[in-house]
Amino acid sequence: MQKRKGGVTAAKGYCAAAAEAGIKYSGRNDMALIYSEAPCLAAGMFTSNIVKAAPVQFDRKQIDSFPYARAIIVNSGIANACTGSDGLDVCRIEARAASKALGINENEVLLGSTGVIGMQLPVEKLEAGIMALAAAKEHSAKAGTAAERAIMTTDTVPKECAYTFTIDGNGADAPEVTVTLGGMSKGSGMIHPNMCTMLCYVTTDVAITKELLDEAVRSVVPDTFNMISVDGDTSTNDTIICLANGLAGNPVINEKNGDYEQFVEALKALCADLARKMASDGEGASKLIETHVVNADTKENARKLAKSVIGSNLVKAAVFGKDANWGRIICALGYSGVDFDPEKVDLYYVSEDGEKSILVCSQGADSPYSEDKATQLLSGKVVTILCDMNSGRESATAWGCDLTYDYVKINADYRS
Image 1 (cartoon, rainbow, N blue to C red):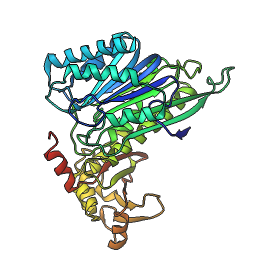
Image 2 (cartoon, one colour):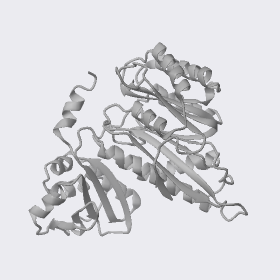
Image 3 (cartoon, rainbow, N blue to C red):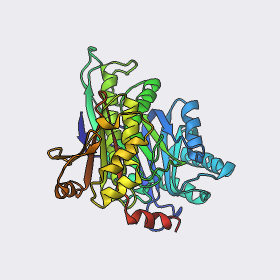
Image 4 (cartoon, one colour):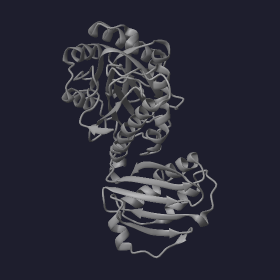
């Protein structure tokens, strides 16, 4: 498996485009298109929030009811959430407009929206934007990046990546085939996935059954997107959609064999990459917090413990202030809902390259350490916390960010 440059246009047969529709912003692109030249199988996961945006409801029905998808249309600025039946009507209008502009069936169109909740989308601007997207679509990496930038709201940097790997038909009499995955995501605030707080779109040219594509997506989310948190808020629009058009030409993956495991590994690497980018770009953030929990009794408990630490406002504030206040970490472990022996816990701060570490808590009590050295470790762009539970063999990693003054400033005037 290799990481390569690019995003959603990296895999065979995919185009992208961006357009300025003037939905909420002025002077910037605010609509994006992902398009496949061949019909795609689609798999998706969506927000667990009871309040679900219109495009979430629309996409769930499309993916469940129809065999293929060809296009994803996404807008930024307005979330099309809490918009009642009018919001769903807008989704249907968008699908019809995309069908006409792209020459595909309207059942092959998926949608996404991000932005302010409670506002209605301007239909005429959407339709004009879709026409512009169809005319501008192209295969280039530049087009993929433009599409990613168009869906940004409070994000400060685009988030995209791509991976390739080779498969051989799991020993079948066939030549090796290169498979590519590309992805883009947006997410900076209202980030606390419970699948999932952000928008993420993955494209791949692998040939695979719909059932296994769906299972692969569901298998990687718990250790990637569901392990990030910025502010503890689970959005109304959270979405991950994966399209697979089969143009790589590999023997169809129709069972859980070695080829399937390689695909899952690559998908997990891509999703973890995008998840980490989102955590590091949290609203107002100056540091990425990476928490490793090791030697926990169960995998699920390891996940809960790691997420509790990166979700703690007190831990986040301490990291911002470069304060090695390990009491806040063990406190966050204690209210995670996991039963463990506090007197077995060791806590470390570790350098980003893993070369240096400081033991700050040993067996649940203070361990003498240099405050100056701890401050040095807390001064980098990535702060790594290692929590050794000493009670089993399971591990998990979660990603978050520090809590800065700018987070309040950004969210105090978000609608303006």
